[in-house]
Length: 236
Image (spheres, rainbow, N blue to C red):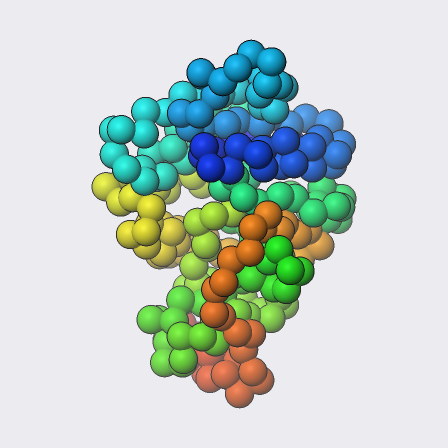
């Protein structure tokens, strides 16, 4: 399996970039491409080994539009060499065994999520439903990894894996910027055609603690979601 890693880089996280790069390198993926996109490396001191952290660097003028993350990710897709694209922000790192997990899982997916851990090791936002699509408390969004309800789910924008052809068919909406639910809008378009897939054999981790307040679903909540889903979309 071949992978393009498209990483949206920022000045405040540049100290994390060697960690991210080394963990990709340590996976020993035979064919990989690492793309950095941002505006932080052109004027760095040449003694800083930034050129060894990526295969391709896309300079992006941040003054065009603040938080234009949708444009950045579409440019990553445009420049990706391989069919499997990992779109990620520069505070996400692959955990050990990530690539082995994908070899075990296989290449039969369109849009894929992995387990996501916070800096403290606890589960973070990964495999979840969109609370506005069903009647449950906002805090209970995290699904068990063996459940899938794509038509009421969304993929969080800080990390996901997708086929290049899917991303070309469903580019991110460049009218939206970071913080305008661009990931929800994209997910709603994609899920109308494709199923989301969880590969729980592979995991990533935040390199800085994120204080999100989301809980795993109780059995009662999961049953409510199942009933809701079956009523609107038919039996699973």
